[in-house]
Amino acid sequence: MAHFKANPESAFLLGDADGNGEVSYDDVNTVINVIMGLPVDKFIRIAADVNKDGMVNIVDLTTIIKMLANKP
Image (cartoon, rainbow, N blue to C red; front, side):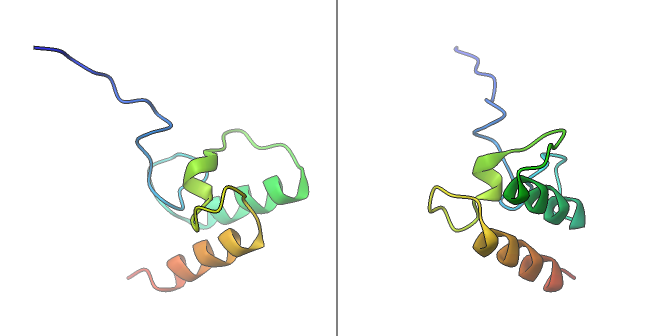
């Protein structure tokens, strides 16, 4: 039987831009920093691109904020 390890880039939570396993306001700050060209410790582009258009921009940022607003 074959064993496979998950590629960290393929196993992600949509909106979890910093890759810590949850969507939080830390992800909002990460996306803001990326948009502004500021350094970040860790950035998971595929998770931050919540509308899947190939870019991380204000649309993704707004969507992550809406996700948090609707979080119980």
